[in-house]
Length: 394
Image (cartoon, rainbow, N blue to C red):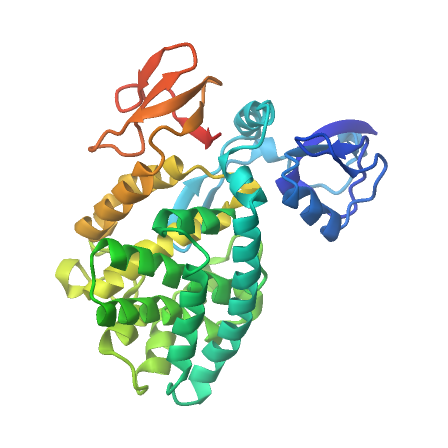
């Protein structure tokens, strides 16, 4: 057997550590020759251990007949967002550069903070109550249930300092098994952020947050083995998932709810340019609140798929949204992108060429590609130099 350094995000139960693992402050987390369990892996993530050396089989020992990942460069889709999977060599280069950082990255520091631990605990409690409320809405009157769910959202908002702090907290959340409920709560919180940035009055803001909470209720009628499938969906499975907006509308249409809440369930996968589903609506034919939920939905889908465990960078998320800008209501999308990314001016970043620097200026026409000054004083205007990009906040 040989020894290989594996990112903590990629560790699997049953692997055996070949040496001890420590926190960045040099505190022991696990001993060598430790058989990894799900609990131990979560502990390593909790203490922001970036990678662990483990024993792995030699290539000749692999008799399973599986395809080597270097032979595969597939297109994955999450909630309608496509993201090209990098070849293993390129991924390893980026990961190696992140591993060489002296201390924790930006999001690792957030995840280690007491504020985050309090938020995560409150979030877990709220999702538990929300799960019951969402299921009750299907069979009972909405009287009191929506107010209860909105109360959960308010409780979480009180654990954060401002909208951008909230987005940082959500960026650091670990994966949950009950993704329909967790995702719906996240989308409601992001809708609250966007609604406040749009200066909505209190009544409309409550309706918008309710849109976020109930937008995916139709997934309760999709078989759980499809919702929780870890791999790529088959064409037939994806067609079943695509029915959830119609299921959601059917479940809500006779409830005592604002019309915009019902339409958000139906239209949150419609796209401004007519490429969405279920009806291929375009532009103003899509309810405005549905357009807001669409932005919140796709942002959470991207970041949750590559949350803290894979260290996705907000600049990459914004880059994808810029690329797909014709799919979303222009005013909502640009406001969300601008407000989200402006928080990271003066933040230290790692560039794809391995250099470290600081974001010194945003490019309004290309928010994902700001001006960066390196530690050596070199200035890169990423809006003009597409040979490199920002890989991580540090």
